[in-house]
Image (cartoon, rainbow, N blue to C red):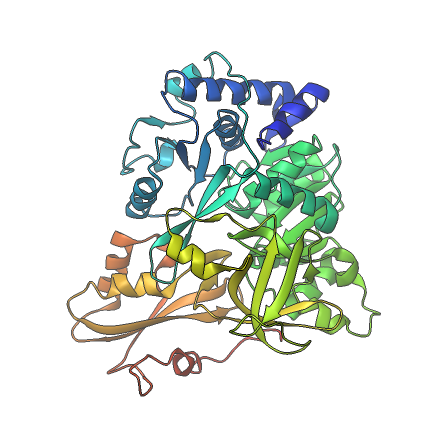
Length: 504
């Protein structure tokens, strides 16, 4: 099925239910939501000249138009390529070229310096966008379950982003898994898009469309703790996806102001490590409103979950262990921990986390070598190391890749290292993540160089990569520690910092 059929179904059965909000103001109902998506589809497939299966990039900050653009793309039988709005134009250009994007939707505030798509570039809230909404609506296009729906670009350890191919079946499976393992949803609920809609927060639109719930985009376009609390009070029964850093900021605000949080129904957190002391404090301050999920772009939001019942059950003899875990396998996923040969390890032994199921990606876009390495005998090798207890609760111990998670965003050291090595005075460099109580991790660079300053390196990074990826600290050294094979020992670099309390 075409994932846009969820919108079509709800709009036909409950056309007058309020659908899309800017802050606490309703913009339109589900009938209008459906009509706008169908007209966007009509423009793309008509005057836009796009053909079935063409890729359409979305480089936009959070805004109400984001939802109608996505569903217009799917309605037209096209493929959405949502791109992190924080990326540098050069990074966007690579994605546009690799995906062979036929069209691009871009926010007005991001349009400067953006390379044009091959055929069509559209900016919301402009006369061109309004003209598109006047196009003849297109009939919903049929798509098979295995057809590509969402092309998600996630950086690889080589620094080159890889396109994760997410099918309509993957998205339907993820939607059903939410209802089975994360939370119940009703028409009275509202999802608040405070985290980027190009990532996990946006993926949760489907289940709320299925149930005819409300979709709220904060006026700030992002996460501001006072704004979330105010929306909870005015809109009511809100849910949201949040990185652990966002949870900490929200809890700090509620604790400091003694704010009323009855309007907050559920906060689903993931995308980085949640420390035990932080979730304990969140439960103390705000009560049992939290659910943890563990997933990857390659199996979006769907590997394990740790429900509010487990988080709140302090009387359980292994409660302390469970809240340090990422929960048990979601109902539509098989999860195991294996050794390097793929053999399942006994409970308590550390190995690589493997997952299999209908939510696992179809593969990497035009990258069969990477696909073969990641998916073996039907199992996705996540690159994450962990152990599973006898009850099936998974605890992550480390990442086999050196990915840094800062504020819920993934940063790959190799990508930053390659930029720093562009400076002629830099001889060698190694980038690691240092634990940080606010951001989870921050980027730290160890640089062996002569006659170069941190300001020069910072300017180099700003020229080539997104601002949030640049190092927060530069440490200049005469040389980097290496093993007998010449490999840099990042473990020795990490040992220079005192951990702030990683669970497990």
